[in-house]
Length: 220
View 1 (tube, one colour):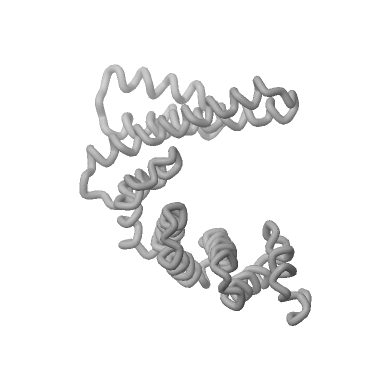
View 2: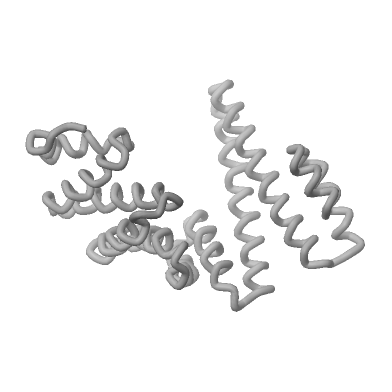
């Protein structure tokens, strides 16, 4: 374990993976199992990143297909890891939340809702859990409930620098959904809050223009 940590500190991920694999063959210490799981996930994400860089450089369909293949492998690996962890620690609701994220990632939305709800019990996860649940509800055309989840996520993330990205996503999703529901004043309110946080966030200014907000509100 110590050697693996030293190798990881030097970004020698492959060697750390080999070291932990050898350790797991002679000892089923849970610390080794979970550290190896972490490194396997890290290695998979690294492979995706390298493939993405190649795809940008090569601009070929083959390279893009390889990115998609590796990304799907990475998703499946992470799903298996968190299923196993939830089996080992059935009362750990933080792990259930992480499992919910992975289920959502592979498109298993209905199964994802219940484990995602486990995150609502933790102050540091509530905003993210509400946001993810909202996205699933919107996908299933439960628009008022989805909008309520986005609103709650934005409120719960407010004032916490560590959850700024979550708040931005929640405000944006709330604004887009409210506009689609023709709740124009509500949509303007969400978009304006987002502009105050980040004037260049995605296409928020364009969306405000379409709602006629710029004529009523001074530019930042």
